[in-house]
Length: 70
Image (cartoon, rainbow, N blue to C red; front, side):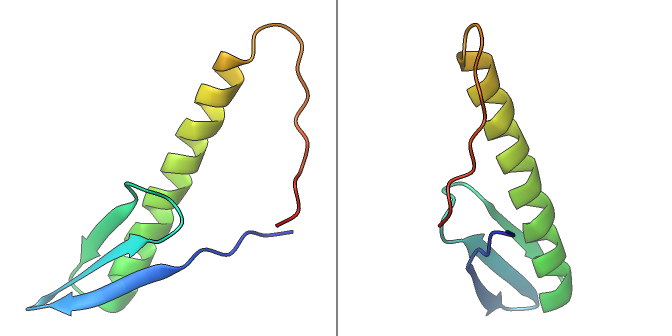
């Protein structure tokens, strides 16, 4: 099941700026709305992968990964 996130976007002069509402610190900009959304997807993917790596590193010894439906 794919997760769905909310992008809060705004045109600011000639630039588009945006944030992912559910994940603090995930924000970006682009020269078009489409570029902004692509940049936000990339930033979100990177943040989630870094969070996964940190969680796995914090789990010492044997662990399991369990999906939690939203």
